Structure formats: C-alpha cells, structure tokens
Length: 318
View 1: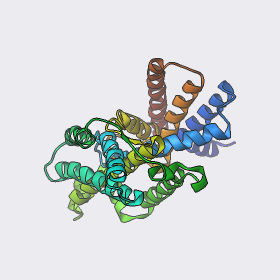
View 2 (view 1 turned 135 degrees about the horizontal axis):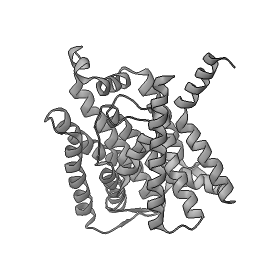
View 3 (view 1 turned 180 degrees about the vertical axis):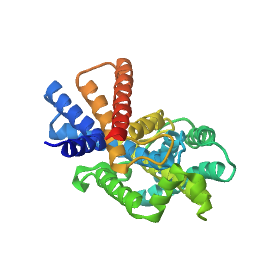
View 4 (view 1 turned 45 degrees about the vertical axis):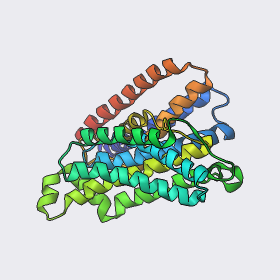
C-alpha cells in the first residue's frame, strides 16, 4: 500500500473514531456479559436512550454556535410535569398534552435564547438562570409530588403493540436533524456562526435569530425527552432530568463536537450518547454499585475525549 492510500485510510479512521469507539465498546460489552447482546436488552437500551439522545441533539446545535445550555435537564422536568398534569387533572388527550408540553419547552428555550442573543448574556449564565427557573416551576406545578398517569394515555408511547413509538420518534428525529444540519440554510448558518460569528454578521445575516432558535430547538427536544420519561414511568415528576445536561455535553464531546463551536455532527453525537448508554448498561448488568459507576464512567469519558484530542491532532498532520 503506497503512502497516499495509507494516508487516506488513516484519515478515514480518524474521521470515524467515534463509531470505532462505539463498535469496540459494543464488542467488549458482548464479551463481558451473556445478557448484553439479547433482543430484550437492546430494546431496553433503545427505550432508555430515546430521550437522552434527543437532549444531546438539542445540545449539539447550541454547542455548534459556541454556546452551552445547562437548562435542558430542568426543561425535561417541565415536559414530564406539564404533560402528566394535563392528562391527569384536565383530562386532555395525551397528544394535546404532549404538544402543550413541547410548547412549554420551547418557551423556556427561547427565553434562554433571548438572554443570549439580545441581552448578550453568556450561554452558561443565561441557561443557569433558566435551569433554576424551570426546575422551580416544575416543583411548583407538581407541589413537589410525583404525578401518577392513568393507563391508556402517555404510556401509549411505550407499548409494544404500538411498535414502541418513542423509538420510532427518536429515529425520525435523528434523520430529520441530520438532514437539517447538512442540507438546509439554517443548519449551515448555525455552523458558520460557531466558526466565525463576526464574518456571518458582516455578510448581512441576522445572527441573533439563529442564536435564539437553537435554544428553542433544545427546549423542544428536552421537553419531548421529559415526556418520554414520564411515559415510561407512568409518572411525571419535577426531579426528572437531573444531571442530564452533563451527559448531553459529554455525548457531544465524545461525538467530536468542539465546545468552541463550528464543529459537530448529529449522527456522531448520537453515537456519543450510545457510548455513555453502553457504559451504564454493562455496569448494571455486571451489578456494579451506582457510586463506583460514576467514577468509572468519568474515567471512560476522559479516555474517550483524550482519544478525540489525539486523533484530531493527527488529522492535522494527515
């Protein structure tokens, strides 16, 4: 094999290192546990990760602009709480309840976006404020108690005889946002803003609208993820989504996104979220206690990110 072909192969490996990490982890998990690679376990992973994957996708678009959204976990609680209350206390059709929950998530997301785009808040500070407000709102509307959801409402989203709608919705969202990122002016502009906001502004593009919109997208997807969790648990709670913002950021970084903005891909972010999912799943199957799980998970995330850094440096020399 000549040098040019070797360089081409090396570049392909570097460009797809996230998928290689996922594949390697999948093989290791299959070896470590006989129950890992079974239809039931794979289905459970898909059901559990449908929500977190949506949150990670929403976070990615914020990260592409060079921002960060710490409110996604709290907005998940809004989605879960609002949908549960509407179904239980107001007897609203579950589809209508979901739409209203998504609207509520959009409101919180756009609120953060307005602070970032029009009030010149840093994304970290603006979303920190929204995180507190949203979590507090969820506790207020639920009175701090879980909202039990009656059968035949939100649980329709997770029923086998309906072909597990939350999995279908998650797959559709992945395809939709991957296409949006690559083939729409909005997707390309979001990436351009993260790469060089001033240049985009000088080109006559109203960057503030795009900045606001990415937080709105993150709010909608986070609220939908909260609805998914409420559907799976048949309960809406103000504690839903705690710490989910950190997993979403980790999924983006493992997927190769740059927190400085301008770099990241939807499918790779999904792969990053699945890496985290497999880590948690195999540790549960091996009966690893929850606290050591966090330590192990943290070190694995560090290893994955270091690999991204090393391969990115190598990419510059290919």
